[in-house]
Length: 79
Image (cartoon, rainbow, N blue to C red):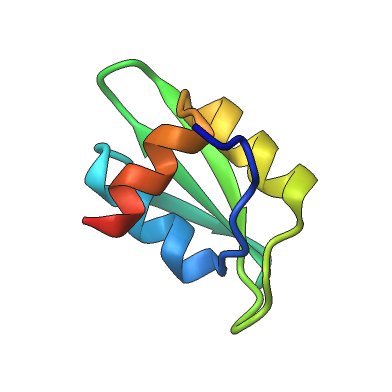
């Protein structure tokens, strides 16, 4: 499978995070939302910039803190 990072917005990332059990915890300022999953106490920060594509390095960090691989993310995004 390809390890190429997809071009996604924060809305798409948030939809996937919710599918895997993350819930909105709080907002940090006006540009970052913090999502939390109680079952394994993971949390991740998602930059909120309407319509902008999240940079690859930022997406990699979000997926790592959420415990997801690129392939898992792509599968969940397609559902």
